Image (cartoon, helix red, strand yellow):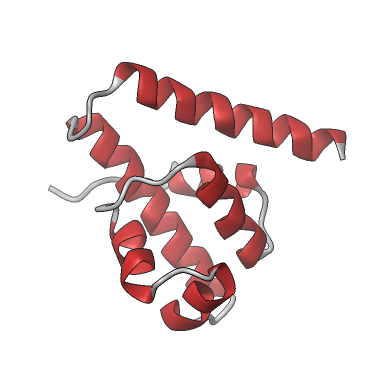
Length: 105
């Protein structure tokens, strides 16, 4: 349980830092959300879940999940945690996988 609390704290700190230093629409903010969205989409594909099924599990409209996966919808840390829980992954796993994605030119 301590490890999960530690993961939550790291993810919260990262999200808070982004909000504190980046203005809405800042290219770096968009880049971060695009990487996270790509990682969410990849994990969803790994567990063979449709976008509609994941959205249902999250009690979220499918178009909103589509925007998150495409990086066009900023989301808060509690959404980040809910998505991880629905995919049965840790915050650290999502963050590490997001590091492997680069924004295409």
